[in-house]
Image (cartoon, rainbow, N blue to C red; front, side, top):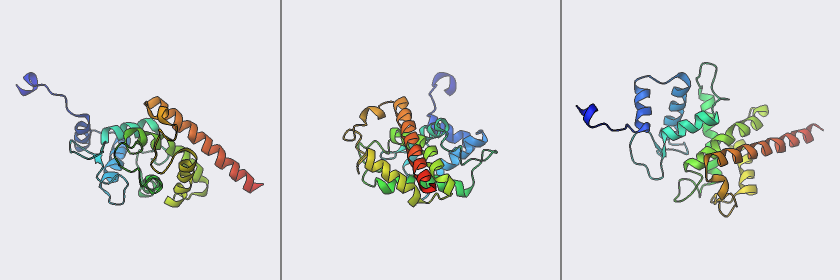
Length: 205
C-alpha cells in the first residue's frame, strides 16, 4: 500500500549510504565512499563534519553523492587506487594532504558564507586539478602538505586572493558551470605541469 499509493523518491545521498550498507557498491565505488566518510569523520581532515553522508543538516555542507560523482568523473583517485580498486593508507594520506594544503593556503575561505572554494564548484575545481599536482610531485615522491602547499600557494598568488574571491580574481565565468570548471582546471593543470617541467630542465642543465 505504501509503495503503490505514497511513492516518494529516495534521496540519492541516502540511497548511496544504503548501497554501502547492503554491500552493493563495486570495489572502486566502495573505496570512494570510504574516502568520503573518512574525510568527514577525521578531526584533522579539512572536511571534518562538513560532508552530508545521509540526510543530516550541515551548515555549508557538501553532499556525499555529489562528491562521489565528482571523484568518479574527475578520476582524481585513479593514481591512488590499485588494480583491485582499493586504496592503501599511504595513498589516502596523500589525498588528504592535498586538501589540507588548500585549507592552509585559504583559511579565510574554508566553509565560509558565499565562498566558492568549499562549494561543489570549488571541490570540482580542486578534484580535477589533483592529478596534475600529483604528477608534478611524483618524481620526487614527496607528497607532504608542505610540497602540495608550494604549488597551491603559487596558484593563490597568480590567480586568486586570500578569500578565493572569483569575482575579484576575474574568474567568475570559469565557475558558473561544470564544463567551465573542468576546462579551467585542466588548462591550469597543464600550465603548472609545463612550468614545473621547465624548472626541472633548468636544474638538469
